[in-house]
Amino acid sequence: MRPSISRFVQIRHLRYHLRVWNPEGQKLFVALHGIRDASATFQFLVDALPADWCIVAPDWRGHGKTEWDKEEYFFQHYLSDLDLLLDAITPDAPARIIGHSMGGNVSMVYAGIKPQRVARIAALDGFGLYDDDPKTFPVRLRRWLTQRHALVPHRGYPDISEMAKRLRAGNARLDEARALFLAKELAVELPNGTWRWAFDPQHRVIHPYLYHFPEWGAAFEGITAPALWIGSDRAAPPNLTQTLIAERLKLLKHGRYVHIPETGHNLQHDAPERVAALLIGFFDES
Image 1: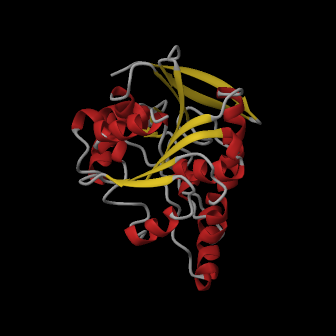
Image 2 (image 1 turned 90 degrees about the vertical axis):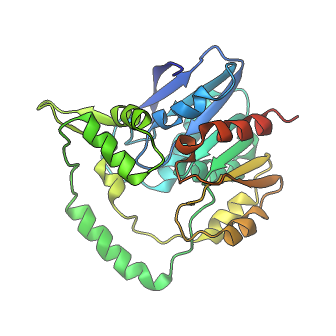
């Protein structure tokens, strides 16, 4: 595996962790992970990318080695964090961005509201969500209140191998070696010798608002950078159909969609070489 180094920057009141591969590389890229994940998720993809690419991957607030917030986490928090992160990582040039899941969604919306800050963008299973039924709003608020007032802490695991088994249970394509690497990077050891996941358990609390894609679609229409959507066999959420993805693709001025078969939602784990080949072709275009 290609080694990475850690850097830390202050983003408002939080100490943010940045994982950097090949800091002397000639081409700079920003990689953004998904919810309840961390920057290490890109390790296998980085191993398949060109040696002259410098990849900077932050741990979002409340994830990995970045500090937890004292309040709740909302989509707009990640959006504002990204704005300041890009000022710290690439202040003098538009960014090349690779985003997975939530990281892809955050970066796509950002590219629409600040198009001058994004040169090219590739989103892995980051096509937005499906519209919520307004009649579900009272149920959602009740769930939010219950989860908010009775936050369930992380369960403890006796060792890393048990956490790796949990990861493999969620993704049958993940081999044991990669599962062990990810488990170690996504976990923290407690004083009593047990382990827990590193992300803030507040990320399991449902959001107290409904999702309306037309608002995001208006942002997508503002994207001027070339955009690549890479889809798996299991887009998140699962009922986000290929037809719906195609309709959303029409909102992009310079967008294209590529599907990688036999992959799950974490396609950067399942097919890093195939994802890398698509990214190389896309980002190396004139």
